[in-house]
Length: 242
Image (cartoon, rainbow, N blue to C red; front, side, top):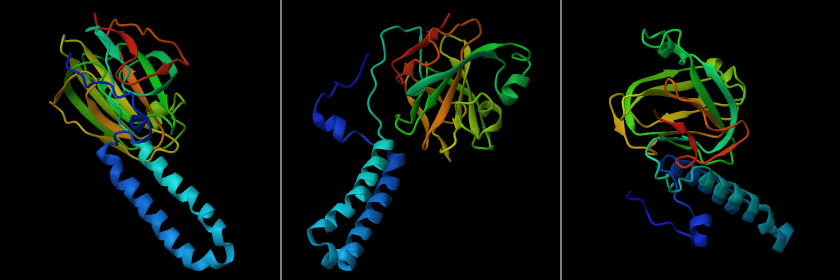
């Protein structure tokens, strides 16, 4: 398994790799902080003297936080080839047997069938880059506009803005993944197309500022996790292929 060498330096924690999607947002925040610094210097320095710099610190911390939101650390998958891995960082908020999402459930081969759905809730403090649970080909991709309820609620899977993916694993089994926008999130960023093949834990998209990922396990596969468990994308095992 060809994986990058782990970096245990302080730099890796303080200055992590940033996903390209987040660089422009971080730079915008940094430019705004710098503009405020220049303006406040001329407007208030003579009144606050040495205390002036304390007023600008929160703006630079906020800029740093924007960059950190889009951090994209390397992940180290287990040597278990049949493992289905978590596509997102966060905590499991729901586990239930349901039908395939939206129009996928109307397809003849899945109509009336139930699949185990594992839902991972991501707060604004989690890494928001999403990774494919197991290697496969994207058979269908379906974007559905919607509302922005709290993503931890069960109704979010039917009411919120979301993007569904139907994936055929390399062993022939089919599973589903859904990106769900949450109360704070306002944009799903898919980065794959129908017909595209991805390796396990390869990045397939992200969601901005808090959200949820649903995994519809393949038929006959049961979840091996529990509600409240902490997930690490590309490392934590959800279940096993048959």
